Length: 230
Image (cartoon, rainbow, N blue to C red; front, top):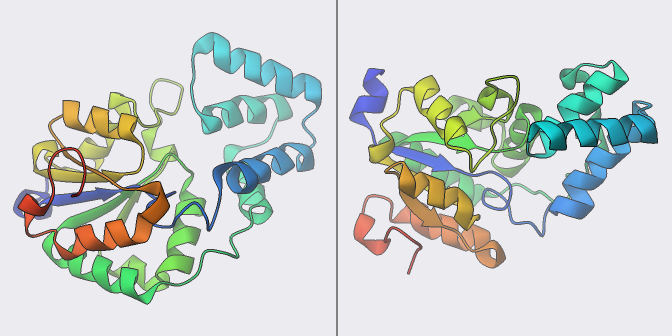
């Protein structure tokens, strides 16, 4: 465990639906639409897609990007190539710069180790942060934990799998009991709670104001309980 993680509490923040509201990039009309277009663009046939889906279900490899691994195997392409094309096929134009969020994250990074933890792929997370707070985030001490980082045992281990959380903790040398986890999915926070983390539920309908309020009051834990903000 590194000295930084020992000395600072940890702030783990989800990306999609938390760093930005879903009104700026919807799961189905945005991310999944880009995913589906990529399947067509790389030339994967309906038969290959069916086999990939059946294989993922048979092995119980859950999540969009475990499905992508089977698709890539069927199509004979790399996951990196698939996600490069998917990034191009996803419409990010509604994700706009937010100066206030940038300032709040900058302040938070001085008192906490900040990790953006997402079930999405690394290029997507970086692109979102570039658009939302600017490329300066790379110099703010903010780390990311993407779906690629969760790979273990021949598959990705997306939230709410405990395996992914433990891989994240090992990678960054963090003490889960000294960690706040901010997410918009209650089931992800159920796992966080089971591991001794301090869960903070963010409202999907009011994502930024909730996150901003939490970041502003992060050094005053009584404002929040183990379930949600007041």
